[in-house]
Amino acid sequence: MTDINQTIAALWRIESAKIIGGLTRIVRDLGLAEELAQDALVAALEQWPREGVPDNAGAWLMTTAKRRAIDRFRRSRMMRDKNAELAQELDAREDVSVQLLEATLDDDIGDDRLALIFAACHPDLGQEARTALTLRIMGGLTTAEIARAFLVPETTIAQRITRAKKTLRDGDYSFDVPHGAARHPRLAAVLQVIYLIFNEGYAASSGEDVLRPQLCNEAMRLGRILAELVSDAPEVFGLLSLMEIQASRFAARRDAAGAAILLADQDRARWDRLLIRRGLEALARAQSLTGSPGPYQLQAEIAACHARAISAEATDWGRIAALYVRLMVIMPSPVVALNHAVAVGMAFGPAVGLAHADRLVGEEALTNYHFLPAVRADLLEKLGRLPEAADAYEQAARLAPNQADQAVLLARATTCRAG
Image 1: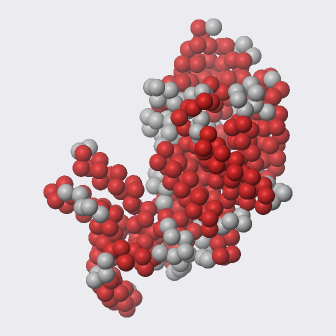
Image 2: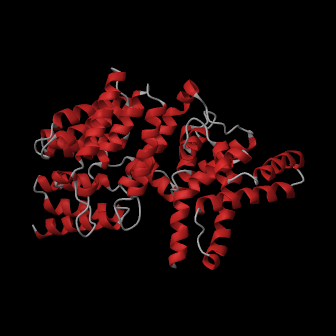
Image 3: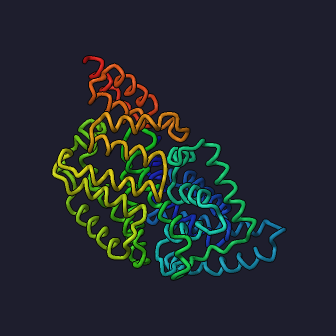
């Protein structure tokens, strides 16, 4: 890839969600907005290598996409009346500066990406469908990456996205952003989308690196905006706390070669104390708003246990195991059960933890989840069952989604083989 193409690709990653969000509120069709934005990208790939990248590349892409919209509507005979109205409106706006035009699209959310997440998380769409759709459009995740996040086949996610777009298109839904209390029915889906974006950045599901910090930073930025907008929702602060505390470990999660470092082996002096403080403050805010914590608050409390401990051995693993039990009650899942097995192993010994982990072998959702054999391998190693541990590490390496994790797991397998 040439330097100019790399620049365009980087600009596209930054600007695409905002452009699609703005276009959707004009054309009222998410699929069409995505096509128009892609048309603008194609135009950029044709022109910018010859003419150079414009000073305000995002505005150039938006303006080009809007002109494509005008052309598209003018050509459509079936939508003649609506198109004429839209074309007239957009033509009139061409005399207005791009900045003023974009300002007309703003609402009290003040962020096109977050606004589109709210708009696309319509209650008439199933939660899985709207989450997949917004991750694809707003998070910029591929269908394969979303499939790995949900632990389902890629074809399932592709079908969900296609159906969601069709539902929104055929239903003639408004893409206006709900205000005030009307936001609350969509809040759970919005929080899920933001956290999945964060998770894809925190534990990359593909590629050479274990981290994609840009996705994490974007998720935290959206979370902070949301906390200002919906200041009475404890789960908003629970999620924000969870993301801030987890992000505090970025600098300690990779070694000099980029390989992953397990939590127990991380240099805690490298943890970002400012992010930990912000996370603990958000957790305190969540706790002040409710006596019955939700799943994000419980996960934040678990993260806080790690953040407060001076070492892995000094961590309150008993409390963490108890918090996972509460989490399994309100958010049962094999992944939560696996994390509970890890905590039990640390609190009560590897044999007890392995018994819990072994119960999850055969769970369909964990068939291709590399953490299950990785956890079993770690517990088997602690029990001195080294050949079995090596087998499990190698199985985990085969399933690991990124090369950095594969390298760490294979190194541990080699250590076990050497006895």
